Length: 97
Length: 464
Image (cartoon, rainbow over all chains, first blue to last red; front, side, top):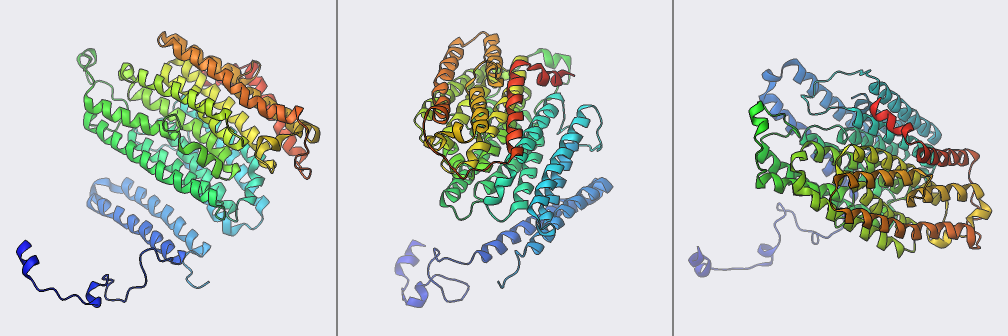
């Protein structure tokens, strides 16, 4: 590995040295200020993503937990739904001002 | 169990009221009504009427101590609401959400006072902490509020990390999350096994993280900045009700989980107590702002509450109940007056007795109680704490030191009284307070004195 690194040809171009951003041209560095809307959407995504992750262990133990477990999960989803209605009503997902 | 479910539900109700209810007074009334309901169902549960029967597999257990503590928290919050809820309007636009967050904190409080499993302790502490981070930073346009919230969040999550690490180590040592496991056989109970290093390490990590949450020295550094930076209405809430509840969980944790290892942690707690008393009181003397002085005073009062942990006996528990009540009521009263003033420095209180004699008189009673002057609740609660520590028969230097530090505390509390009565000044001439506000303040002051003469009014609830 060291040898290939030393012996291999190096052709540096400005395009190659750019940060890889999924093929899109970069806009400034990471300290670039962005609209808070992006963060809000991202954090809400994480929240509901985590909710879905909780279904996996439930799915594995679906039979064992029985009806009691079903109602517990139903309650969990109901609470999450309350939060979902809240963020919609509050306009957290409205993109245009 | 009643209060736990209702507080969570009412939090959701308050959340929805933010877009369903337009008038601010209606939102406020809803919050107060919710709190009355909460108190009612909790008192019903104290009399044995449980509405919900949920199998928690022994992870939550409501006993007399936790139910009484919850009642005290709800009563304090009720008084706090009717005194200061109107001032929350000035903080920002999300009026209903502030109440929702406070109800979620109350939900966390019912959890931490009644846990039997370390997981529930962790959950409760987090349910308390996360809304507090938000409330600290709720004054979005204020740089100090933002700084306080960030500081609180970073340090708070770090200490929660310590707590989780401690819980993991204890799980490794004990093989269960339960705080107390009765020995399976008589033979097992008879042979005392020495505590493993794993258990001791976990215990010390838990001690540190809980000390952080109650702002005991040397883990107190966040307290002055956070209490100073947060909007005053919310400082009042987190310095009193939340702190008292975390103390209740602190006691519960060390009583249940580490009662057998008392000899291992007692000296450590004694050192933390002494350091907290020393740093809290000595630094408070040098403060120029009353709000910051109250932050340091809350550290020094935490030092006194640590005596209950140090002693860990019946008197200590009784003392903690009384102390938490006396401290919460008095501090809520002082903060309610402080919020009304424009200038938070000592000069801001100059000549208050001439403009607002009732405000000045009640504030004096609250400050006297905080300083521990006889005939107030503060005196008897300090007395109970020291008595509990004396009963252990060890480390008497700690008691003497505490008395000395209480004497130091008189200095900075009396500076406010001196400013109010003996200095000329014209504070906030446009200061207007409603007659209702004055009436409640007087009622609160009477309560502080009553508890100072008849502590049995409160403590009898612990037994009957």
